[in-house]
Image (tube, rainbow over all chains, first blue to last red; front, side, top):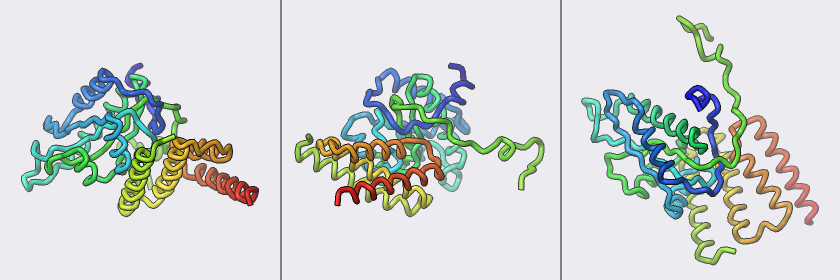
Length: 172
Length: 98
């Protein structure tokens, strides 16, 4: 599968078979995540993969955005100790870095015949407690991974004319 | 059929899910509530299935429909129509059972 094909055929997968996720598959996905670009090469991310059934069940209960039962969930965290603004805050750029890692995860999963979905609906404090995160490590996003039960049709997208302009903005 | 301890565990996780969802909805778009409720119905039907309580053909079909809705892509208008159809089917089944 080439990159463009992967980009255009990837779907958000919310229903999974009961097949487990192998170590090789998981490591391929996580290596791709860690290969993403990051502002100033700060690599503030930490990836925590949860596959153990009981922990997965607990994580799913604290994450309303996870619909079905995935084989694994990768928790994308930011480690605040690695880079902060002079005021000690988080540079907005780090969220784009995590977005790049997320897309690498989803495309790699797709390439491996797997699928997943980014999950923003979860209880941060609950997940932090469940995963024993230190205060400086903040969970920002979850990604479910598993073998797709079915491939959903492409969701409607805004026409390109509505979201893309050349040279100057020409929308309303 | 689940043993009592497993059932207790499953229900505990369902309660945790409902409470976490309630908290989350303060910060989320209002229509996420639709998904949370559909997912709650789906999770309850899963527990019924694990306890051999889904031999009723109507409930088995309902589970299939609920799963289809909660696992599919997000398309609000189509979903509203499907929910209308589900409620009508449920009402007809309730009338039949009276």
